[in-house]
Length: 241
Image (cartoon, rainbow, N blue to C red; front, side, top):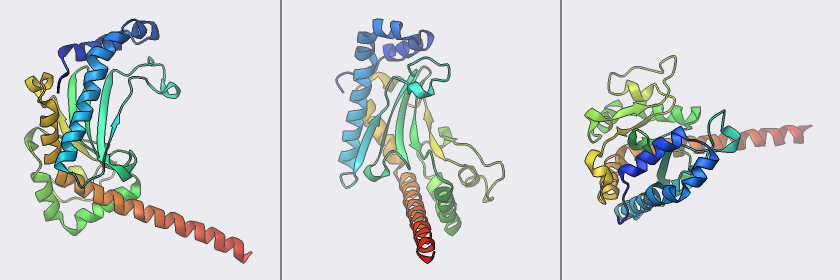
């Protein structure tokens, strides 16, 4: 990686958070491109290439966030985000379902495996898969790399869906379940080695990613079947009339 991230990349995000207005950003746009935009996009692209080399059979796609907030969702905040992120996922997931992600923010970094916007049906399939083989999921969860420093993200159900013990319950009783690390790379963050190290970390999450992906695909298939049956029911009702 010829143009790695530097401390100036994070410093820019701090300054942007304190001066989140268009005149300031326009005056510092060249700096943004040099210290943040270009190196971040280079990191994303090189990580994608590493991942594709490891997984040539997978149709991996890349999505890189924009620094600009959606004007419809400002909610009193400035027009710019104070973080950047990118995600890698199977092409047919269309920015839904499980994905690998990396985020750079004012405090440093986070990265891992995300499964956001999971529907109720997909969550039910996820739990159903665990129900069939709890011991297998325990083995999967305990096999995560650097498990002692990993954390889970995601809203928990107010009423737990079930209890299988301390390893499974944190996964089983969340509306969405994402796992990863904060400030994992430390001194390696600002080196050309980051894309390779990030890829190595993602590959360690691959077994859990595949479990997530299977739950997503089964859930989507069931949702589509339900929608089709509903349409047939409507058409049948109209025909009967």
